[in-house]
Every structure is written in structure tokens, then in C-alpha cells.
Length: 214
Image (cartoon, rainbow, N blue to C red; front, top):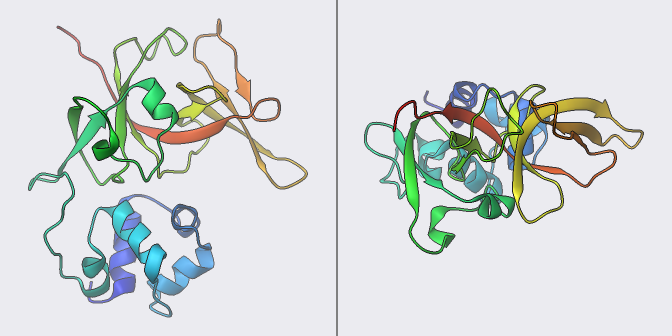
């Protein structure tokens, strides 16, 4: 991988992202990502910073292939340290957030894989996602991922707190805006629709953990 484009393409494919999905994360078009990967253009400024932060590498590595020491909370074995936050904190979380902005004592869980530096964990509460998810289960959530139909997501429906549901795409409206629903697995709970409510996606669930014995 002697070129910037080859490094970027390799990192993108490791995350199983399309050029369009990566473009949405960085804030550029898929055409621009294609130019980068073909070495016909190079990102600069904020785009380069966003790429480096998302992939957990330095800007220098992207540009030159040489990695400097990073301040990322990752062990030498590729294990990432993820903060466990409350549902209120999750309601205000963005891909730019990190544990350094949290008040008080912060607990962490460890996870493998290449996740964005805004990745966080929350504990399931309530019964809306039973039987697949039980109260007390741990969810690891990446706010830089774009949800696909059938993904489990942490979203927000206008309240101060986040909610955990299944993502269901309903296409686009006449203005080209995506329509989606946040669906509980337990039929006793209500489905939220972006057609009738102001709902948004905070992040996509990438891991589900359950403690079998205390």
C-alpha cells in the first residue's frame, strides 16, 4: 500500500463501507472518495482529520504510510477502550464526543475491531426489545456508521434521553428525505416514525453482550 489511495481503500473495505457511505461520514460525495482512492485528488483540512479520526489512525499515516504514536485509547493488541454512558448522555452524544467530556467516574469496556473514536456503550433497560435483548445487556454503538435496514440503532425521539430500537427504512418522501421507523421487538410497545415524529439516529449497534452469570 504505497499510495494514499490504496491505504484509504484498504481501510474502507476493512469497515465494509461503500464509497457513498464513507462520503456521508466525511461530508463529501462518493465521487470525491473515488478520486481519493484513485490518487486523482487528496483530502485536506477537515476531511483529512475526519478520515483519520474515523479510522483510528494518524493523518501522517494516511498521507505517508508512517504511523506516529497515537493518543487513541487503544492497547497494543488492537483492543479499544469504550466508555459506558447513561441514556441521558447518549441522547446528547455525537461522533465528536469522547469520554474526556464526561463528568465523574467513567466505566469502560474493551472491544476488538476498527471502530470510530466516538464509539460508546450503554446498558439495555426496559422490556421494549425483549426477547432478544434483556435489561442489563451491554450494547456497543458506533455513531459514525450509517444504518442499513434491519440494523439495531440508538436513536432519539425528541426527548433528552436516547432509545434503543430496530431500524426500518421506508424509502424517501417527495422531497428526497429518507423516511424510517424505530421499531421495538416487543409488540406491546409503540413504533416511532419519522413521518409523524422528529426522530434521529445517534449510532448503530455493533456489539451485543450479555452476562450469563453474576
